[in-house]
Image 1 (cartoon, one colour):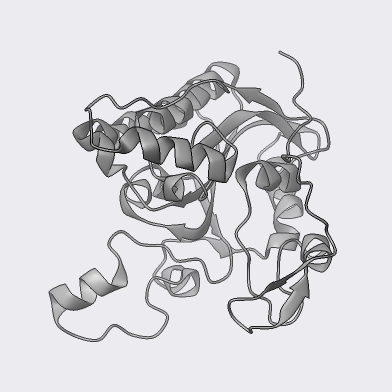
Image 2 (tube, rainbow, N blue to C red):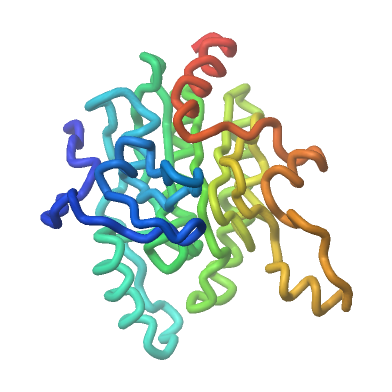
Amino acid sequence: MKVNNELENTDNRPRSRKITCKKCQNQVSVSKIRKNYFICPECGHYFPVRARRRILMLTDKRSFVEMDRDMESRNILSFPEYEDKLIAAKEKSREKEAVICGEAAIGGSRVCIFAMDGNFMMGSMGAVVGEKITRLFEYATRRGLPVIGVTVSGGARMQEGMVSLMQMSKVSAAVKRHDKAGNLYIVLLTNPTTGGVDASFAMLGDITLAEPGARVGFAGPRVIEKTLNQKLPDGFQKAERVLECGFIDEIVPRQEQKEYLERILKLHGF
């Protein structure tokens, strides 16, 4: 396999342009946001990060080798308008699917890594997403490599019905085999990690990390609020609250994540 150095898709738009921060409403230049790890320099708001950029931020330069790059979803259930949604998702994300998998190095340690992309149908989990992540775990298990998983997802992909839901158990089984072989699995939860992804492999890591303010949970807060018929507490499903409940080991700022992962890998002998 050849090293894939095209981690960030080309963007011909001028980097001097400005965008409005959704939190503080200030106009911030794209160049400043890029230099600040895609965090608003005015209020600290975390902007979404594409999967390839995420891998670039976490791994050693020019070390990433992508796997199963050409796998694409098909409308296996003949769901109305699904083909159109897939075409739109590919154009928006400039990716063929909602997850990117491969092998790389972090601080010189070889790892397998997958990163989900919220620009592809909200990072939803379909048959191809489940298959790619499963294959990555099987590859890592055979070679005794740790797996780093970066999750962002709206959950299962409804256009694939039960086939999508089956990916929860399939990936979870691959995680279990990886664990039984004595291998390490580290998860980084980003905003949002919900639905079937949260209910399966996103919460099965040996070490679970999260970005500040990330929403982590199964059903959405509005659904829960209506079901319980009561107002939810402030910070419900935010990473800080989930940490207090013991489901997350640490919240790590974006600019510290690569160094943090390097320390974990060295502590585990990699």
